Length: 156
Length: 157
Image (cartoon, rainbow over all chains, first blue to last red; front, side, top):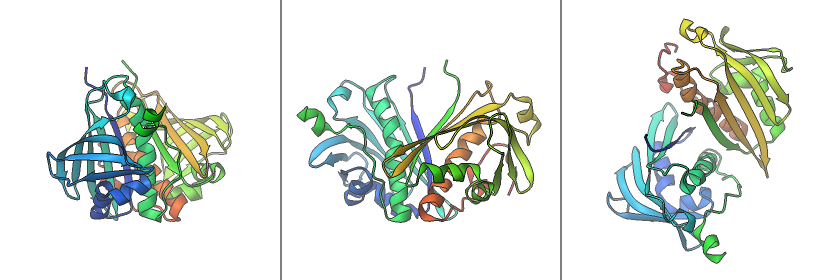
């Protein structure tokens, strides 16, 4: 049987290059991704990581990087409860549609009934709703995300 | 095996009352739902219809009305003969306040195996709900060309 995947599509009134910047620029992600900053040089094979207040939360390698069209990276959550799960994969497809961009996020290679599957299924709609609001209105959404940050786990 | 269903969650900077109005007002729905009017008196057991530019595309019956938290109706696509032969499916909206936001969860379920409408609704809902979110937050719906959805069998504009 195939492994579970999570697919989410949203349409955003923006340009593909601005959306690309929003996905790859740490200053941008910190605003809509609930404090998580991303860093990478975005070359295929290069590492990337998300950090919240200096503590790593997500890390992996860049798998595909076609500016303004497609970005893919491997996904390892540094949450202790997800440590034994296999590395999953996230792909962003950006397609211009009239004055909007259709953004499709596919998170696959997930473990059946895993913690990561549960966390990302709740997390992506929050992150992508906030991203859409920021690009369209200049305001992020104030959501209390579930506690998936490694720092809080480490402190517990 | 799990039955096919389509679930979509979005967070909108609005109030449950405004979102309820957007889901049940035909004037409102025309703006974000590809010129489609939602028609019903929103009482349990009453008929429900979607009317796009004067053509009825979907019909159903109101199953649950708990303003402004739960709204549910049966959903039967009637534009094609193949769809008409299928049994009605079920659409449920759940509105949950989250601070200054509303978490909207749409669940579309009870599809027959091999349903001919599953492809269309899976492509349609993200566009409709994206446009709804934009309209409530910015005052302007999205201008997504319906043909951009690439729904199988759709030959409209």
